[in-house]
Length: 128
Image 1 (cartoon, rainbow, N blue to C red):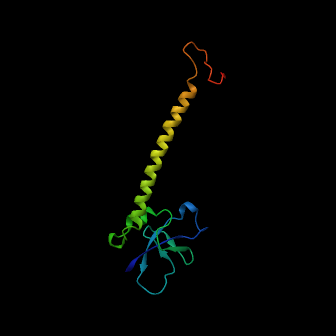
Image 2: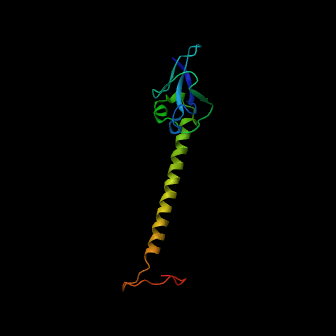
Image 3: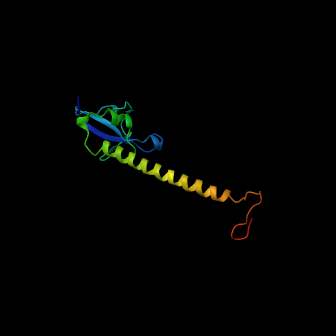
């Protein structure tokens, strides 16, 4: 039986940086340290392979978060972090859409230098 949960992620160099996600681990009820510790997602680690986190850091493991028992969640730890990430991603998408619109308008203006009779009009600086 576990006595709460803890957050940890693989130490630098153990996995690719994109895989250094914050996992949720059940804290063993026994005083003896286990030979391996397994996250709620099933990822297993040995001694010296994890750095314990006091607060969420980096990307959370979605499988761990989805499997976290509701009573073990500290409101504001994984759930708030995921909500913050979702808000940031939404804001980035809005910015990307604005850039796409501005780029399309700019490209449209620069490509529309021909007149209907097939000749090109000159820009204000006199260049064709």
